[in-house]
Length: 461
Image (tube, rainbow, N blue to C red; front, side, top):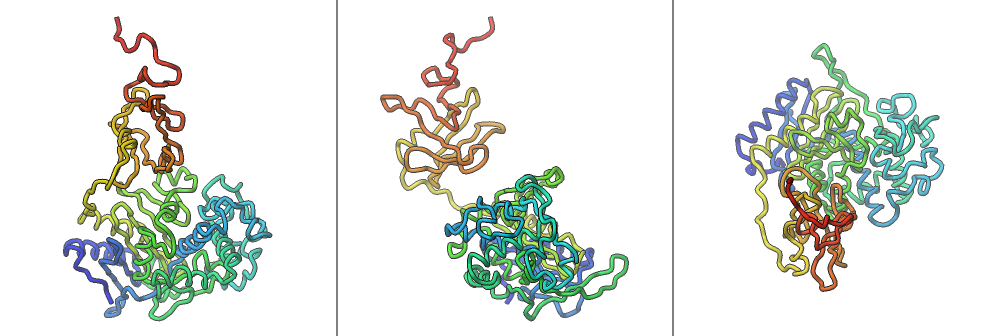
């Protein structure tokens, strides 16, 4: 059944429908289905089709291509969270003999393992996986093109290796593990390795004529963890809600934040495009927003999942043609339409239940040299440090339970903040990664490295 539409205003729903209608018509897609998620559930569904009276709904399967990689990454992060592996482990430690084992698991997740983008011939997306029965057949004679960790280079074989890693450590086929650990807990009953009716057929649309022909549908074999899955806009809406909010049965919010954090060095062209890659998730800066998700393509199909965590809005777009609409742009536009037309209403501000006086004493204005900063104790129990005006380094800090705090982001990520006290217990200064923050600019009463000139502040004369 189509989810309730009442949560969005009529003008917003029309704008969404207009956007997908333009995409289907101008992109000459046989069919297009889309969904929007807000507050953790689907609030809009739309579809356009070239077949009268036969529009797809949220239960029709499309092939989702490389969105499959995000599912595979979730399985790998589960293994990490259970302590079965460390992301810094070389692949060789757990899956020996691949000739690509120098790459770490983190590097494979982030496409920085130095592996080739594709398999050796023939074209793997249009040929049976049975032609590549072993990992050596997938990787080819020269599987490594770059030193691991040096650069971002998207690699489908890299995710084949991660799928094989999951199989080795779980002792079961990749798809069985996926079903047991992710699909069933999240209620993704219409996501599968093989198509299940009702499903769309894949088409190639002629670039210079309004005619089509069917594309082959191949079982990818060992390449399945890189692009095999079929899914629906309904299932992907639920998956998007999970990627934004977490589910302790699958992955925590903290691990998902790690997945959404850029992990790969960006190429110059990526910097210009505002794009980067995390751990199994693409990261894009567009229209002033940070968007995370993944796109996918296989012959006959294009897919996109886009999330703005800050706006609590996600979009799914699925089409059944090899090339056509730029669906990453469509997904971003669907998110933008909702976020701008109906901005997220923030949760009510609530004060802390209690505040440690020793921590409360630290709040207020501090100076790093002559630059003014504010340290705030926030309702979530964190400390927030940022410049009072203009641009500058800022971060939130989590209490460690011993009077110190650890930075959570930015320049001070994982750096230690501590209050340095005098013998009488009063605070002399804050020490943050060796930087000294004082209550007054270059406070002569604090232990400022290099000392403070004995004549103090003065004018010219």
